[in-house]
Structures are given as structure tokens and as C-alpha cells.
Length: 261
Image 1 (cartoon, rainbow, N blue to C red):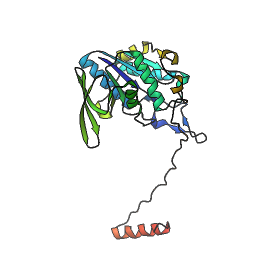
Image 2: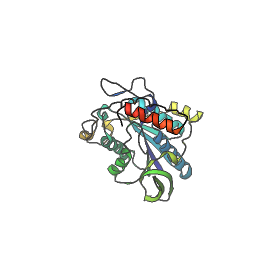
Image 3: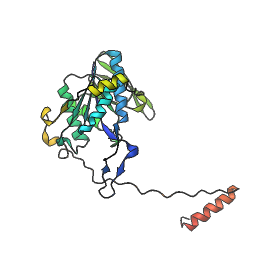
Image 4: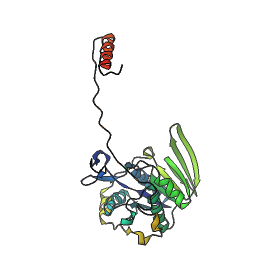
């Protein structure tokens, strides 16, 4: 079985800061991590490989430092990794990103299952995975909480607010994984050593059959005009009285002073 996993290196959201002058993310000195949902996708791919055999290839589109995210996936057990990186890809929205990743997957050749995290924690759009499937013209099942493959059919439990849907789709298929699908494994010492020695090939525009007009900022129909931090809310007032009647009286007084009532 040929399995492809799309991963993204994202800023650690607990460390993200915004420049108040430019309203853009401050990335200098901010640690980066593998998108958590993408690690669930990698684990799902490894479990499929362990059960059915085959190969797991991880791809990522990003700057040169995204190699570190790919090496972490190799340390977990992925067989190969490829970085899609070129200045021409800069500023890509979800449509341009999915178009580029789909072109890279076509270049890989044969694939049975494509796995993505349900969304990236920096953009939270949940659009790239489904859009890749549309570019490739294959079936897709989003929010996968459980997956297995029998012959040429994938059987997926799809998570939603009211429970689960059981969906079957013919291969090849693209799946997006939710957190509950598994618990990602930790890299082993042997895996880490292998990842440190691994050569991560870099594919540029010249390596892909793409239309340059559909890449990067120029090929992105959506653009971010402004990013801002919401004003911090003032701390509330705690009312502590011996009886409920006294507490209500104090509350009414404070609401009156604030001209709310």
C-alpha cells in the first residue's frame, strides 16, 4: 500500500505574538512544531502500513526549515520525506497550497491513501485536505476517527457532533484525521538517528508540472488584509456576602453605578 501524508510546520501557538505596528505574526525566535493533527495523520498512516505493508511518504510545503518537521515524521517511522519549497510558493492561500501539493502527489506516481490532519492550528481553515482531493479527482472523507482498508475499499468512522458516520470509499481516497483517531507515537532513538542521516529532497517549481499563474500570492484568490489581537477584557468583580439577599443588593448597586441598569 502506498500512503502519502501531508504535514505542515506551524508556530507553537502558545508562543505566537503579533507585531502591533504591522499586524503580522512575529516568527523570529518563535519555536515551530509539526501541526498536531498532522501527527495523528502520520500515526494513522504508520498503523495502516504495519497492518497491510507498504510505504509511507511524508510531504510538506514550506520554507527550508520545514525539513525539521519532516525529520520528526521520519523519526516516527515514515519511510521517505519530501519538501516542496520555492519562493514562488510564498503567500499561498489554501487553494494555491492544495494545487501545489496535488501536483507533488501526482509526481510521486502511485498512491492508495492520502492522509492529512483535519486542519492546521495556525489557519484553522480545514480546507487544504479536501481541496487536494478535488484537484486529484478522488474520493475524500473528512474528520476520520477510525480507518481500515480491506482490498480496494477504505472503511472510515467519521466523527461529527452527534456521533459517527460509517463511510466506505474506493481507493484511492483522501482522509483528514481528528485527534481522537489515535495517540501519536514518540520517535525512537533508532528512528531519530535514521532521521538525522536522512536526505530530504527539495522539489521546486521546476520539478512540478504546474501553472505558474496558480502559485503563491498571485495565484491566491483570498488574502489576509489584517491581523489583530482583541482588546484584553477587564477582570470581573467578585461579590462575597453572607446571604443571597445581600449579594443581590450589592450586585444591583454595582450595576447601577456602571449605568447598566
